Image 1 (cartoon, one colour):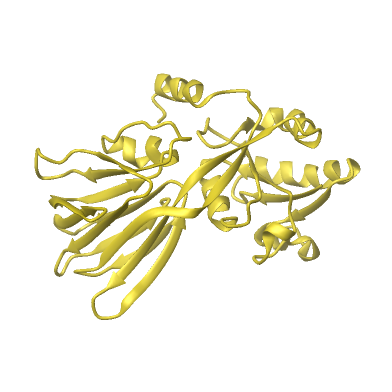
Image 2 (tube, rainbow, N blue to C red; image 1 turned 180 degrees about the vertical axis):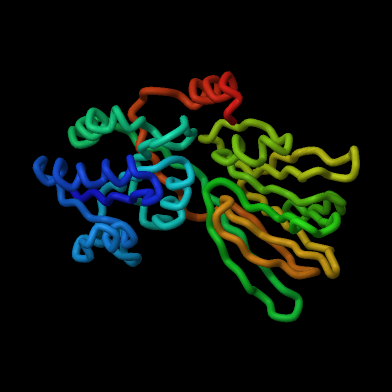
Length: 285
């Protein structure tokens, strides 16, 4: 078996765990490779799995960090079909499957084949500019957000679902979330909680300046199209809260279900609703 380690280098516990796995896994007959950043950090450049043809090099990826690290890994591995085992280092996460103290037991289960793989819908966002045509193409797991800058005034968002015009909304922005992302920024803005195994698009406006604005849940076969009206204002597109792109007045943002999916390793230890209940009780959503 070939396992790739993707490590959050900003967390000492994650780094320590990765170094321990570099000794533990080969002793179990596993070939271990590292993400390029970790390979450089550890001085093991020959163990890097690189950025190309990752699906041909790995059977499984182990992400050591938290939900943010897993979101980053999901984009990096998009299209590879490599299953991801998320190991949480820090606060309870929605995406990570196991806590750090349970890592070795989880790996024993994985190496013996006692796991399932759950597919999660990803999002694709394309940006078209009147003067230039296509200027951006992005993929994410959680959400695509159009939002005003820190000092910008309210922006206007002409919005369509499929071919249907649903309105022009004065707001601070709009969130198009996947079901996986429904418990993130979308939930904070008043969006619904959606079971992550359901494929759908969730559209929620941020601080809309109208009582008529409500969240929309659309078919995965639909597209959400937003045309930005914000002369002389700063507007940003962000993907998973990690990738940013500056938008201009009259830019068109098209969001749809991506053709690729994220594949998450599940050990059957806790359900989505169990995690949700715990986080709601902690006030940590």
